[in-house]
Structures are given as structure tokens and as C-alpha cells.
Image (cartoon, rainbow, N blue to C red; front, side, top):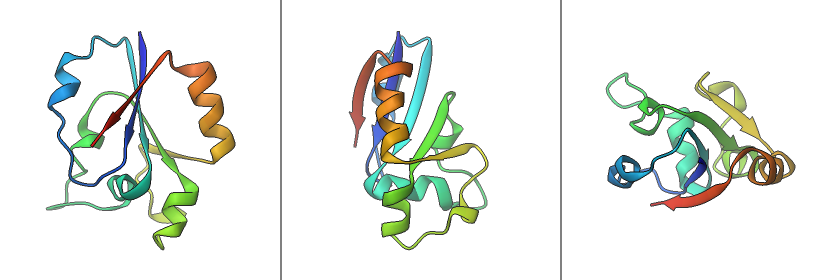
Length: 99
């Protein structure tokens, strides 16, 4: 199963990820979750970015929060709303929201 996980908060509970039997995980950072793509704590990547999977950040939400695209962690691919629709319809079978 291919699962896309929407992350909308900077502080979130990663425990549900232990129970997802996914062959492919994609993390889509939206809302305040975009901070995972640009901030570091104690010089380390966000716990989300330490997971195994593909990472995407919604450009519109990033720009709304005043973050520049050149500050995005290299692990994270910036996407537009159009790209997001393609990911949802063509790359992932199931969606979940992680808060």
C-alpha cells in the first residue's frame, strides 16, 4: 500500500506511523507543517524528516509563512497545488492526516 501522510503541525505525534504497513510513504508538509522543511533543532533535521519516505512541501503554504525556497531541506521537494493533486491521484493509494 502506498500512503501519503499530510503533516499540518510542527509538533506532532509520530506514533501512528508505527502501525502503517506501507510499502511507500510520502510526507506532504502543509500549513504549519511546512516548518519541518526549513527548521532544525539542535542542528538536526525534524523528526519527520528522519522517517523513511518521500517528502514534499506545499510552496503556497511555505511562502505564506515568509519562508524562502532556498531554505528548504534538500530531502524535501517543493510542490504546487497542481503537483499535489497529481501526487494524490497517481502516486498514493491512501491518505492520512498526522497532527
